[in-house]
Image (tube, rainbow, N blue to C red; front, top):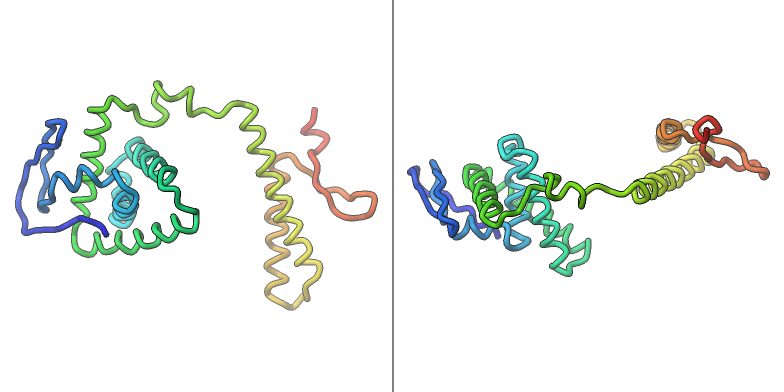
Length: 215
């Protein structure tokens, strides 16, 4: 469960382990709790969800948000949970995020991110994509090409499914119209990546890189 606890309006200055003080109003929240919000998966999920519901991403800033996401991914990898289990926890966190906004604890969510940033500074950890980590985070040309190939393969599979549903359906059915529309939409994406639709010797449709794109 989330640990954001609103109390009567007051102004409080608390000091975290790195001896950095942050002003907090109108909510009083234990510095120990805020210091731990990104140390385990459930409160981290809830803190992120609360920030989404409270529309705080702009105030938090893109670099600190990416850093928080990096912390969450590290927690996920250490958890040993399956994708289904992680998805279930995320859904629970979304509900708790709405509760956070409902009890007026959006200020606490923002301070939790501020505490995280102070801890980041104290540990000497750079933001993701800062100069210190830029070379480590950039994909190699080979991996980028592989990702594009996998993306095209996925699009072709989706197009084939839509093509079959479009050709095999009845013209007056809504599902048929939707399938045909999806087929055309995916075809535009493939064309945008330099692929052309052709016919194989047996007459079945195939997608391959357009001749002009290979030059």
